[in-house]
Length: 263
Ligand SMILES: Nc1ncnc2c1ncn2[C@@H]1O[C@H](COP(=O)(O)OP(=O)(O)OP(=O)(O)O)[C@@H](O)[C@H]1O
Ligand SMILES: [Mg+2]
Image 1 (cartoon, rainbow, N blue to C red):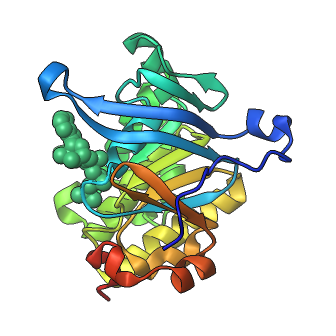
Image 2 (cartoon, protein in one colour; image 1 turned 180 degrees about the horizontal axis):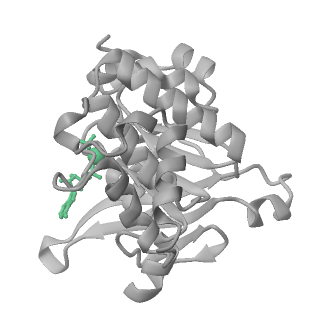
């Protein structure tokens, strides 16, 4: 395994590029709890995600991946270091300000978190309502559900959809408001091989066509090829940052999460 190194962009990188990055993190530390119960889970994270990249984050269970994702997504607040998301510093923001930041981010979780009593379209419409666009919500929901291949399922409730279809509704909901940044936490974990592949291919297509930045946590090595770049978090520290080819040839499977290598 490589020795840890600083993962911010090389010094030669133009400052303008960093300014324009979707995410720019410097010296981020994060702890849960206070006093005697204080437990640090992220250590000195430095990371820049340029716009339009698909980045996969991997690493052992408990290494801090979800914690880092929720910090970037403004779902919890960081106190130490700098975390710029879509050109806004979010360390030190109030809860109300964090809610504003979240409007520009699409979230996709392992469990789709759809409302079971609402149809596919209504689930997506709820996201549109957050923007206040009530008049067009149905059209917007139908359009994005069509894009993810669910045109003929808009009026189905989740229990009448397959796992892959539910996850595609969740993707539609995450994308309907045109977020510039998409954060996904193990989006294929509950899916079979083909549905998982379809879901990431769809995300890749949307990222490339619409210039979205995607940060995706996964243990699923079958989908690593969609990544422009793979970062590895171990015990709360970013240990490596590589292209797929380098990742595969330089990592000893024994030191990575076993789940990544179960085909
Ligand atoms: N709300 C919390 N309060 C206290 N500790 C927490 C909390 N959430 C997570 N932790 C701890 O922080 C560490 C990192 O957890 P996190 O969920 O970020 O790991 P992860 O890399 O996403 O793991 P997995 O691959 O299993 O999902 C773990 O040791 C976990 O026990
Ligand atoms: Mg996790």
